[in-house]
Image (tube, rainbow over all chains, first blue to last red; front, side, top):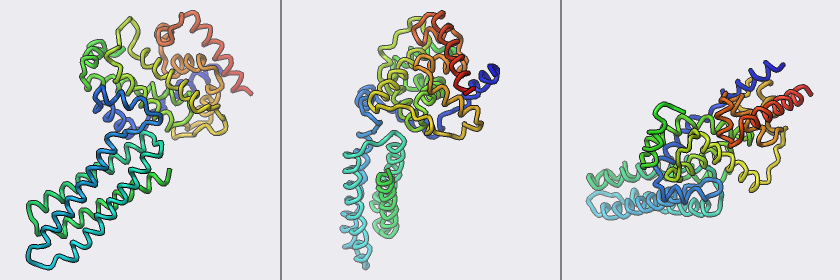
Length: 167
Length: 168
């Protein structure tokens, strides 16, 4: 029985942390400067406030900027009114959703893995919006493609809302 | 202690994130296991383990090598985090709801996990370090800042307790 116990205890060494969690944790920690690591250690239920809030603001700013460019581009020849109207709706929806997310982050305690998931989705969203912005700048005729990209960004942002509400 | 650990620690103290990353890779699994076997909840263990290494990185400049392994310092942070966690959440372990995970492939392992949860904190520490992580008594004594004699006495008591619990 004693030998079985020792064998069983040794078997517990097979317990390993989840690899995705480990990678995210490692990357986050190593990206911290000493000052920001200091701020984050004090948070109960880890929450990467500053990166999340920054990404939220950036996504909102990009979505608004794209809409402004679309308005300007709409004065070029060709009937673009329906695309601009669609972009207007999507931009408004994005801003509302980002505000809701910001409110939920202010009022909920979220753990590291949720913060990490949200951060990853926001990063993808910001990248997509930045691409749409760049394409519009270089080729104002690419309205349809830009609207598609901001639609995709809107869907990604909706996923974050679902994540927070499922908690 | 891993090869070249002293140099890695010096580099990490100097601000090299990649050096700390290597220390993380080496010690994170065992610190995670240590916490998981004490809190019996995967997500809480992940959260606490993350806090341990974040705190270690934050305070690496204050680390001074005093003949103890680097892991000893990590274990101190981990034990304090678990104690704070219990104080703030007023948790008592409900053995019936101990999480089963994919590692709990056998009933024996799950029984062992539940039995460990019934030990005193110091007994848990010693059992995990000695018999799960297979650390020598000398290293466990340094990790816990206790004499080797105390470790031997406590480990024998802990093993007898575990056998009694598992035989019930």
